[in-house]
Image (tube, rainbow, N blue to C red; front, side):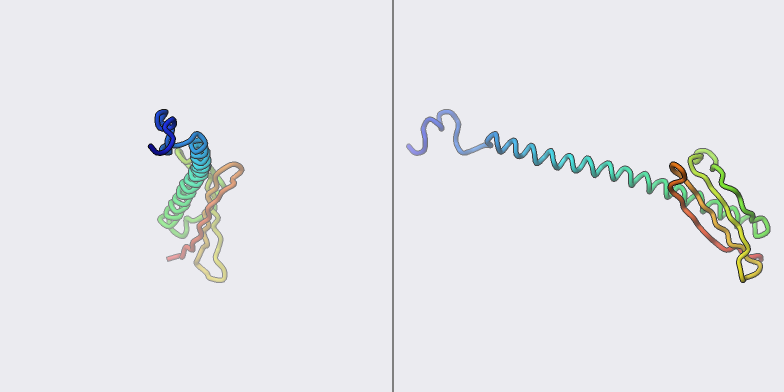
Length: 131
């Protein structure tokens, strides 16, 4: 016979995991899962900001397209106002000024704000020329 017969009879051989190994594995797994949970929260926040940025950019581009369609003579400044539903959490402002030194051109700036105290904004500028 080789080894310890009492250990073999009780099933206490060298195979399997000890309690300490099991506890270490649980701690390592817990730390990994906690890190993933924290990372998931950050990813959700970044995804929301990306979605808001895309929406704000689209609202600004839509306004610029409306101004281009209406023509040079119709381009006027607009004060900051809430966008139509379902985008009422966004506010849009249009600034139109004569482009200098060029004549017969207007510089148009569309700014879209959102968030608490307008913490975030997107601004797009373009030039409209008189035909």
